[in-house]
Image 1 (tube, helix red, strand yellow):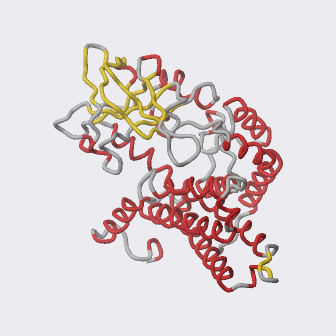
Image 2 (cartoon, rainbow, N blue to C red; image 1 turned 135 degrees about the vertical axis):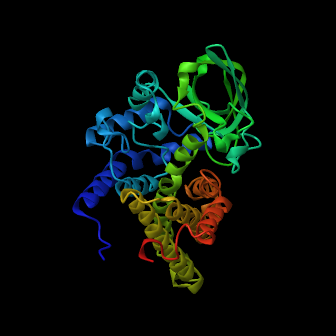
Amino acid sequence: MDFALSEEERAVRDTVRAFVTREVLPLEQEVLRRERAHQPGLDRSELRELQLKAKKFGFWGLATPEEYGGMDLPAVLQSLIWTELGRTFVPFRFGGEADNILFHASEEQKREFLVPTIEGERISCFAITEPGAGSDAANIKLRARRDGDDWVLDGEKTFITNGNDADFAIVVAVTDPEKGARNGGATAFLVDRAMGWRSEFIQTMGEGGPASLIFDGVRVPHRNILGEIGQGFTLGMEWIGKGRYTIPSHAIGIAERALQMAIDHANTRETFGAKIGTNQAIQWMIADSETELEAARWLVLKSAWTVDQGLDPRHASSMGKLYGAGMVNRVVDRVLQIHGGMGYTRELPIERWYRQVRLYRIFEGTDEMQRLIISRDLLRGYTKIGGHLA
């Protein structure tokens, strides 16, 4: 059994680390300053400039198929890259990406929506969550009613990431209430903002914020159905599943950077004539953080490895998401405690992480939903204790 990274994996990781160190880390103080002034950390043009710099490094479309100019990297490599991006709080992501379910589009839709999104000319958002349908996504109510060659959408989506900036939305709507969303009664639509939906900013405890999307008699051509009629819920679950290993991968990077800050502080901060790192209370917080960080790392890499092996990743990904999200919350909390009052200020990124990572236990499947999936798989015999080693 070999736990070492391959030469390719190490080379890719180190190249991303070099890019982040050279191009992204120097922006951190300005990002903090802007956010203290309630401004975006990066504006759209700055993000685009960084993405084009990354493209020169060879990083463009991590998960995008090669036929669309992407890298089509294995899940393990993607996980390693997301960890490196987690080391900085600058809101940067590599370009050349599109929502995974957009690849179900027709050829005409790909030209209109997919390709411009990959090239960075358009911004999309995925809209399934509603005021009464969060974890219970099958309870969506936004209705799409057929009217000639069009569908008319009425209802509201909420907590939609990129909803304030998106040029178009992938909207999952109820098309057959009698069947129910889970049983073929929901369909996905590609809906341009110009068709009439509007977004409303939602202020959260984190930086930036999601949006509510309002649909009031929005007419969508039949040709804008993504996939097939009745396939909406299935596509929605495929979209959500994508985040199950990328989110905790990012969390690992945050935890690594934060823990190193705590170690550095413990080795330099003095109280009562001694470095605070000599205190057992501090030592145990550091030890617990490192242990949990390593446990999360292997759970997350295992979930990504499962994807690469063509196995059903849901059980492993749920364990990685559950533990990784909890881990980073506990680590950041300890790091803030070690830094004392300075950790609570907005001069350092620690309180920013404290607010940011709380979301990780909620979005793309709450802790409670991950526990439901994990326990159900075992109770119903879908998997065995020990997984593929059982």
